[in-house]
Amino acid sequence: MADKIKFAFLLAGGCAGCEMALVDLSENLLDALEHIEVVFWAPTVADVKYKDLEAMADKSIDLAFVDGMVRLSEHEHMVRVLRAKSKILVAFGACASLGGIPGMANIHTNDELFKQAYKDTFSTENPDGVYPQPQYFLDGKYDLTLPAFQDKVRTIQDLVEVDYYVGGCPPHHSFVAKAVEAIVTGNLPPKGSWLTSGKAVCDVCKRNPANEELERLPVETVKRTVDGMPEEKGCLLQHGFVCLGPITQGDCGASCLNVNMPCRGCGGPIPGIKDYGARAVSAIGSILGSEAATDSLLEKFPVLSKLVYRYSLPASRLKSNVR
Amino acid sequence: MDFSPNIVGFACQWCTYAGADLAGNLRCKYPPTIKLIRVPCSGRVEPEYVLEALSRGADGVFVGGCHFGDCHYKEGNYKTDRRMKMIKKIVQEFGYEPERFRWEWISGAEGKKFAEVMTEYTEELRKLGPNPVKEGGK
Image (cartoon, chains in turn green, cyan):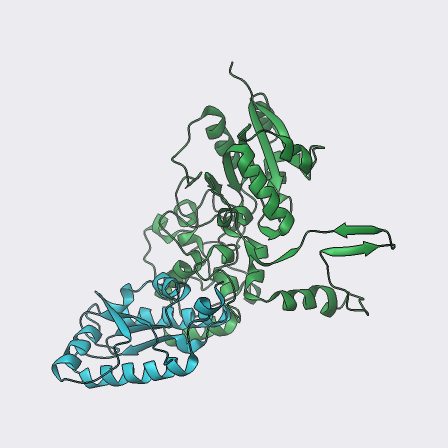
């Protein structure tokens, strides 16, 4: 048998949920481990330091996953180093490929974010108004340099070339198994593709009216999930709940819809979409039945970008607030 | 130096584009600030196009379609209206002035209106100044 695949996993600005998704493979992961040698998995699993990665030879890692977005100078540095050391780099999960939930911060200024996080939150006690600093002189003798907070959230492909993308927040484990298998067997699509089925959530959704050959009707009343329980059957969009299923990749098997939650788009855009939120606007705009429905949608969602770009704001055309 | 705004315009071929044509035939004067792109229907204008133009430094984006009830495809312009309302909000949330994006219903008979709208919009954008993306180099 050929040599084992040298594998690296870097957690950038993520929550480690994607790494949990990989661990959730359970038996499948054990099978995969027969073909894989973990050379770097930081800072969560293996006891490997950043300097160890820096010391490795260029292109010595066969396969590297990155989860999380780029927010700190540390993330940027490590992503660049990992790119240089690896042959295949995979942006793993919604944050790495699209910016994810933390990306919503991009429509605020850093001042607003710091004020909220270190001053205004009611559980915060910070009478001196101390904010995070990249330089700190501790106890009069230690000169510390800490990762600097950058002016916006960026995705991995904003910095380096990415070979493959995997969507999901976190990626669904049955799908991760397929992706890992594709990589282990070398059965890969062209570079720059998403490792997905390419089907929309609606395609795999049990609630899709097309399954029962029902016609799609315009929506008159827009509802938020707090406005009541959706019915067990029928398309959520049809019931007025804004669901992003039509434009989202359905490798999750429509998991959210199965438990009566509308899709929020963590799977990433279906092929052919450049700007996720703009296409969401296009899709939602065409099912609204009247002026009144549009107005009520705008009223119910006071910050519309956070609905349509929930997982993809830094990957949008506008990227961040210009002011 | 006098600032001359760069406006990217999308015009439906049945109404607003014909209106622009008529403006020319009527010898109406309006500033040469708009670059008009003909589309089959204003409903064909993807919100992506608007955001793309703004993110690449257009000072203003204009979408023109038929009056309600006049759409060649019956309801294209209603969809445009609903989408554009949402896009206007998003554009604002990203820190752009709402005036940078505008849509109007101009029929094929309203050549004069087309010239007037363009003159007025150019003036409005001139007061607003260049697209912040260009200045800040973000």
